[in-house]
Amino acid sequence: MTSILKDIAADLKNSRYAVAFTGAGISAESGIPTYRGEGGLWTKYDPTLYASINYFLQDPSYYWNFFREVRYPMLKKVKPNPAHLALAKMEQVGKLRTVVTQNIDGLHQEAGSSSVIELHGTTRVISCVKCSLPYTIDQAFTFMQEECPPICPECRGVLRPAVVFFGEPLNPQILHMAYEEAANCDFLLAVGSSLVVYPAADIPLRAKQGGATLVIINKDPTPLDDLADYVIHEEAGKVLPLVVMSPENM
Image (cartoon, rainbow, N blue to C red; front, side, top):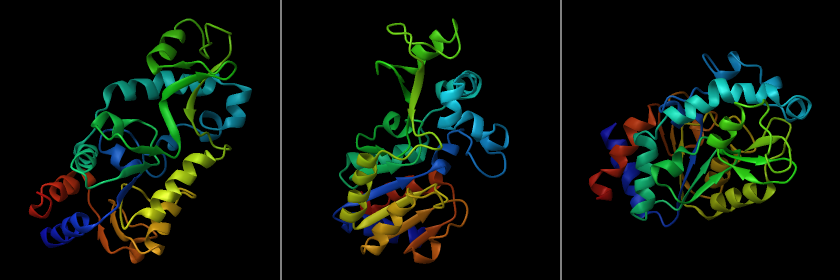
């Protein structure tokens, strides 16, 4: 694998506009379970109840019980892993323009990445559906000690996370920004994504169709492997630090 890592590092160094696209696999290395597949969250929790906008509007307590029992303790415990830190380092040394992510955990920002496009929103921002006042996850958790679902103390509106629920479209402005990054880049690093969820998976596909070098780092095969210039089926936390530390990028 040493040879392919050197080639990837050289292409990254020579690129003029590099972008990263990340999925659940990179967060799984920090201890956040993926949603689908063996051991995924949706094998334990029914997404039609916990992650559907229609059901949230009917009975938000289902989501908030999931938040209290699973999401909040997880977010308070997990930390960025070497893959997150490597991407942040790439940005800091001027080799990576932005990270487009499917993840909602905020670990890229915690690792130090400043340019992050969150396609599916973030669980770390909470707001009132009535007056739009923002709250932190700690505040929401505190409110839940009094009542569930948590209620805005200003207007008594129900709180909701700033995520895209099933049944909701992606924010068109956010999606447009991601598509622009795909159009502008000449090097795209797809990390920890199965590349099966659309329209998010359009990002690396559009980049490749536009002539960008496509690198896929994922533990399992993806539908775009045959189109990629480089494919590594390995944990990103083992691979990306080696790319950063390669002599080509020192």
